[in-house]
Image (cartoon, rainbow, N blue to C red; front, side, top):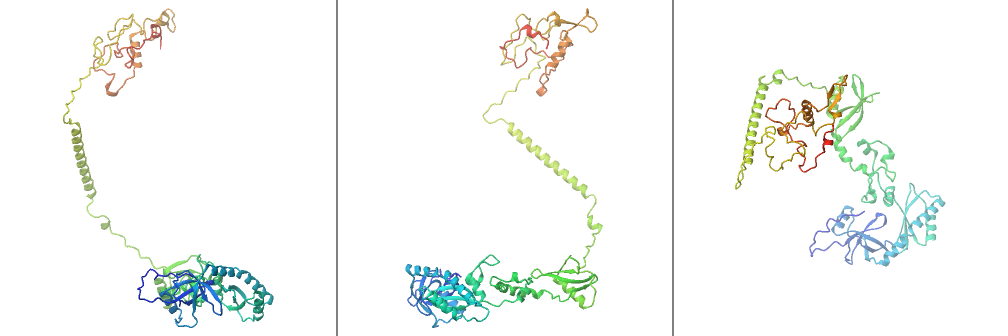
Length: 496
């Protein structure tokens, strides 16, 4: 039951005399007002020794001080000049706190022993808590009972058992739940054990106004009574119910009687259903008032739902606006725009390319490259291109003039067994072997050399003579090094 001191950071003038009353908290959330006659420098949470009610002293903790205590006393209607207000003796020392803690350790065993005595005497009462005074001269027993109980014999037994002055105090079930404490159904600590001090009566009418099910297990708290929080939002529900129509009887329709099933107060919605039908019809409060007025006039309701207003169909003139040629004009205008944009883009690109190709300042322009002559037009006796050494003719072979003689086989003379081969039916008329004739050699050279079409390679603009099918390239390939060893005649003359 902590209280937030919202005036603790406010500077008080020096000439202002502080309030001399302090609120002190004891076990179970019990609070009392004490007078600080000695003007002790107290801080919230300090342990203080106070004058007990009968005799002796007790220990408590400061829960509130300053001007907020004056407001609390005014709220609880306690006079500042009351003679029941006791004084604060001193600030508790470590020895006082040790004695108080040792006394509190005895309270649990005392309560169990006292409950055993109550069961032996067969008294219809319930002991809920025991509180010892800090000097161990008095014990306060809290109990709850429905009727009056004669506990004189119980007091004598307790006094003889514990050697203390016994005091019995009856409390209600809600006060008992507040002293014991616990968690509510909302998940927070109980209101009666944290901040609620005065208990108001709660009736089932508050549950009816809030459209809650009258289930005692759900509406009751830990004390066994109706929850105190049912009164918190009751005023808001009463204000919202002023706009909700009161349906005392079912609505009479052509399909039968419609009964009220549920009401959403804050959204102002009401659900009705026919007898034996599980489908509910949701209506707003304005529609329900209209149906109630119709029943009062004796009219039969055809449907609970309001009639639907069909939207008028739009005219043809509203759908087709303007001329029918508007789409053609739009297409033509878009085509013109695209052409303009395209022309502008090409001009910009051409300007960029000319700027990029323009020679830089301070650099001489490059000389144009000489046009290359086609390979077919080059004579075999001419000098090779720059960067390539001249090829030496093979040993034992005449220099080539661009064409291979028809009698010479590629790679040198062939053996007799490879020069001819018997025909299909005549052994005496041999057939020349593959590659012996000029036409076959030309076809083989053209098939062996792949044509590269990039950049016009292996193509010649000069006309080729008859019987020449391939190019006049030096033998051995273009990527072959001139100083690499060449194959011998025996390996070169072999048929591939």
